[in-house]
Image (cartoon, rainbow, N blue to C red):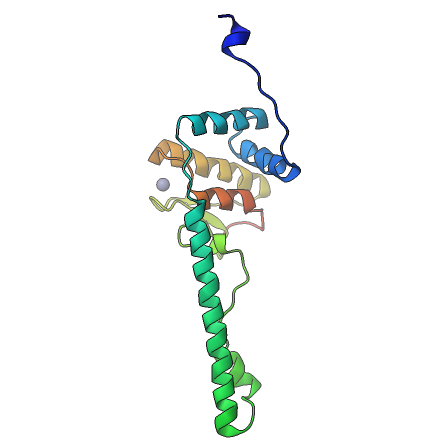
Length: 176
Ligand SMILES: [Zn+2]
């Protein structure tokens, strides 16, 4: 068997947004997008791709339900107050009982997220190692460093949440 037969080429079209995402992921791994796509397919065929987006989805739904429950409770308290005192609750009291509805992306709030938004830094969820940056270029190298750490120190692939964080995370300033 010659080289071409042993290593056939493969090409296909993908959706624009998928391409953008693939480019980003490949950049993180410091390989070409083509090479990255090849890696995914190879991993899938070797059964090395883990599907855990389903768990994340369940977690999101759970949080949405909790948020709704809190909002219903808030409305109930306001109604009861009105019924009992025949006047609406003061603005100040309303603010006090209003549930803290956080609109930030859930992925950064997940306890499994390695990103510490208040200090603008990454922390390994396995060993607690910190990855800080004091410039935008350092931010980029720390993202790569963090991923190298997972492989070198813990010999594991990124979790779904770590992956999402690395894709979505943008330089917002230096670490504290
Ligand atoms: Zn670690």
